[in-house]
Length: 331
Ligand code: UVW
Image (cartoon, rainbow, N blue to C red):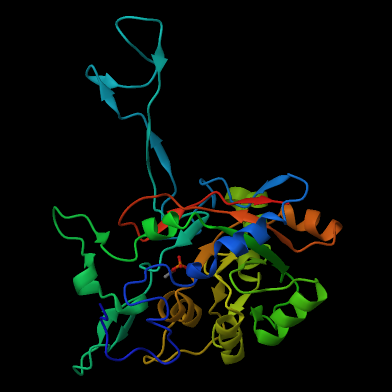
């Protein structure tokens, strides 16, 4: 069912059908997956995620890391070091509470929307990829009611398997000026000089060095050093156009937002996070954040490679708007 009359400029809503909920993940066909498998030549694996209790310290004021609790109850007590009345069994069960977007994560297409008049009634709705709406397609949190994405939830991404070709591009030294913004020219230069190719259905992985600092310095990581790491310049129209035309499937970075917004001027009429708007809302490109490339990057560079097999399914957690992930690269 088509759910919009107007779509934002540059949006491709409808390209994969009126009810599509995975956007450019559709471009990873069985043929492309088989090509990606050919990048696994040595059978060596790299984990591209942080331990989920990183970042340490209070980097993000509003997001909380995992807390493990032994709260599954059996026989009136926590099921931890729990023995059954018959047999020699000793059993531990536990539970975790954490903000799903705290550490290495996928943003679902339900994570981010914009205010836009898609039904042409003169009033802007809160609208998401392919015209899904905050009022119709989400359960909003209320007393006694848990929030839930009825459309575009992370389970849709999980159902694709999230497997294809990863392309690592090191942009640690590509940022322009004090803000470290990486626009089209700088990204193209990095891609070219590193022998990388970004093709239809690829996962573009951007190495900024941010997660290396989180791992290295833990609680004592310095905000100024984190802020000096580069990120994509979502205000660069040429960059946005290239992302569209390249037909890449997803972008994954080792920083918290993929894009940087320092030094960019904003007005009330435009998105504060223009790359999020372009990717998550207009094109259906999932974003991976706070990944970690500190181990794979030197290996790829030493072997003059930029490509690998990537397998990175999120939790299959229906209704969630994001998910922790432990991505695996096979080279
Ligand atoms: C926001 O901060 C809005 O989102 P993200 O986690 O995708 O950077």
